[in-house]
Length: 114
Image (tube, rainbow, N blue to C red; front, side):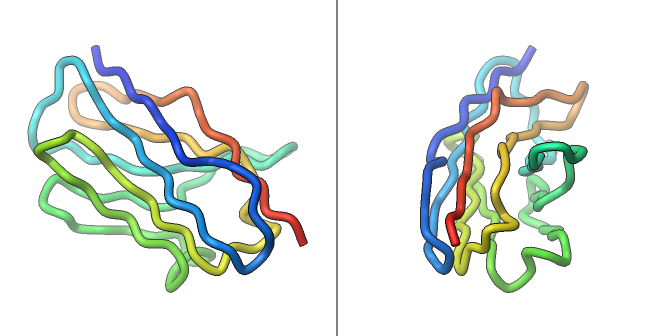
């Protein structure tokens, strides 16, 4: 089992920045992939960004150039730096861990006001 704890969400004005963090604990294996997904009200959960254990990254087109995903393998922690935030970035952001099994955090709310 793997537990994920997210932090860093909040309310910010359009154009502002937030940094999300997610720390994994439990049966952590190397060569995992961690990432962030989000879900807006009335919408399905969608990919924001993922990062492999070797730091290969993948981004949704809607966040490229504005968001940066990074990780600290020694701390089992993944980060999402979000800049130039837009109202359409509003949603619940979920941390994800994939290796043997697929695990989700409880989610953290990000609200961007116009």
